[in-house]
Every structure is written in C-alpha cells, then in structure tokens.
Length: 216
Ligand code: E4P
Image (cartoon, rainbow, N blue to C red; front, side, top):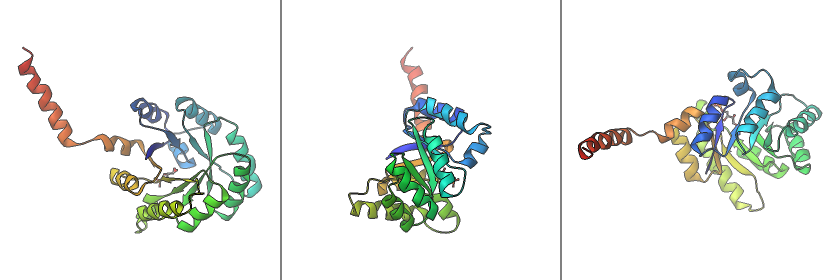
C-alpha cells in the first residue's frame, strides 16, 4: 500500500517528504482553507515542486461545462496533477470526458460501492472512499473500502486504484493495508502516529543509557 499525505500544509509536506515514505498528496478546498492558501494555482504549484508523485487537486465549480473547463486548466499546471471530481451524475460525465483526454481523475466523495463501480467505468484513475466520514455517521467506512477492492478485483480490466481516504487513526491504515487498498491518504498527524510505539522509545532510551557503561 502506498501512502499519500492528505494536506495542503507546505511545512507538513516538506517534513513528510524527507521521511521518504510519501508517494503523493491529496488536497481539497477545506484543506486549502486550513492551510490559509490565498492563490489556489500558486499553492498547488508549490506542492508539485516539492513532491514528484500525484497531487490531487479538486475542482471548485459546479456544472459539467464549468468543471471540464476548470479541470483542464488545473491539469495544465503540472504533470503531477490529478484532478478531483465528485462522485455525482455530472461528475461521471466529466470523468469520462477527461479520461478520453488522458487527464487523470481522482473520483472523490465516494460513499457507496455503486459510485465506485460507475467511477471505474467512466475511467477514473483513482477512487476515494471516505472512511472516517462514514464512521462518523455510525457506518463501517473500511467495509466500503473492502467491498470496492474485492469488486474491482473481480474485473481485472478495471485499472482504477483505490485510495482509502478520510483516514482518522493508524488502525485505519492497518485495515486498509490488510484489505489491499492501493493507497491510504492520511493527515500528517496520523503518519506521525504510525511510527510511534512506547516500547521503542523505552528500549531506545535504555540502549543509549547502557551504552554509556560500555564506551568508557
Ligand atoms: C481525500 O482525498 C480527502 O481530502 C480527505 O481524505 C477528506 O478527509 P476528511 O473526512 O478528514 O475531511
């Protein structure tokens, strides 16, 4: 399973890239607002300059024509760009047109298997089931990821990659990897939590302390 960072925060991206474990970035308008971005294009280009992997960038307009126009503009910003299009009826039309133009799409805001099936048939490069948001309403978000992975595997001609998105904690990462999701996209905080273990910290302290007795 590859790991993407779900953030538009430049410092977080720089720190995570240094770790050598990040293969891409996902952003959305809310994350851009949290990062206090003022110029959408400039902010995305700055991210693309830091990481060589895919950078998912969402359309911010409605309607097929407007989404297509903006998606083409966004795609022209960098070869890294993957355009995020919502899992809606209009979105499907946009995805299929962009796929014909070889513009990669991350179909976002996916909350059902049927949405994922249609996105794949429309030609989306990625599907993003939102695990945490389903958990928030009392459903098992990771079950949706499992169902999509299983169903896509039944049809080897489907090349759409599954991104477990809206990840809230390290246990989500473990389940996504067990299921066989291609990618998990997570906040920087969750990435940091993945490496932490109290026994590692205790053991490391003890080794360093004991070595002081050896090296006299
Ligand atoms: C994915 O691409 C989305 O940006 C993200 O995972 C949404 O997560 P949230 O539910 O924490 O906002």
